[in-house]
Length: 414
Image 1 (cartoon, one colour):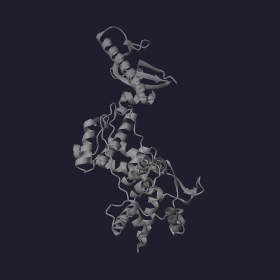
Image 2 (tube, one colour):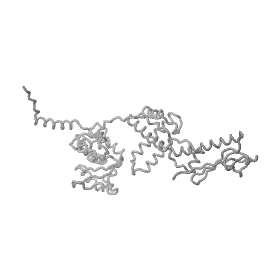
Image 3 (tube, rainbow, N blue to C red):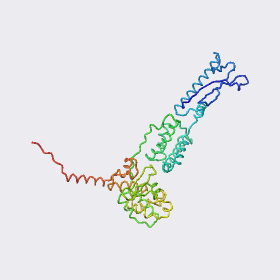
Image 4 (spheres, helix red, strand yellow):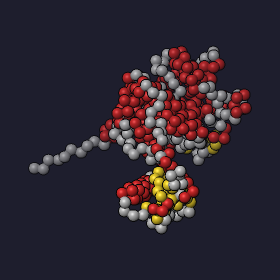
């Protein structure tokens, strides 16, 4: 519906002052709803023209008052057009707030950031993972500390955030907080998302992050070799807790599931696949993309081992997994007992599945990508290293092909 706005100036007889002067009021009508505001000008009632909505005559007083009213009319129209430009509905409430300057109050960055984090927390399991919330919480904590360190205040107006603020924040993360390149870039990118919220709401006219070009460095992702994986699988522990952690880690190495997905794995996630064998059908919590993974014999062996575990029976879970922190602490202990110098983490199992279990054994990268639940193959390439062994095997096939089919030498023409 088209907004209809009319502006009228009138003398309010009922509010005459002790000198007999009456105040001039501005009446703004928007789609039938009225706003009445004082113009801060007074006039003798006999000198006011009700029909024209201005002071009669051409005296200096009349010209001054009428010019003031004309300027008020222009300002109101400009404010109306500003609301339209910002795609804010022009209503009696929004225009009155604009005129009174209510919408010009300072917006501070910390409450906006906190509100964003609160919304993510409410949506955990419904489009967001807990890890995402944790990253934004840490990023907000660093931002608070940076503002205090740099400006000696607890918060700052979003209008005072410029490109220098962004680059100084990154410097602080690298120098004071000792973050590596990728961690610092991720935190600034998190902050950039909050700035985008401000831009989308028209709270900012300019993007202070537009020139920021933080680049991620490719990280060499560690994994276990076939020999190291075999060493852990065949190791027998007297400790029940180490045996449990070893089994769950091995399960992840042969399914490629991340910690959060193993933790959420239920019995109804396992069903018969297209080949008549058992498959895991589960959406990844991180990306909500579907993973379809055939259950390999070692993974099936571990599933059966814990099928009657009390926790699995009570929680309808496949494995009685511990917290991620405990898993990683015990995996370090397992690595020491198996004489593996690498620092083993639970996420290394996913890398191991991509590399040593699948690619090294001839599974195409497209298939690996689908099982890992990646949205594009470039993501899989970060996990899956093409080992020298695989390159050697592939090239040996090419050598054999050439040795069986000698190249025809070109005959000379006399």
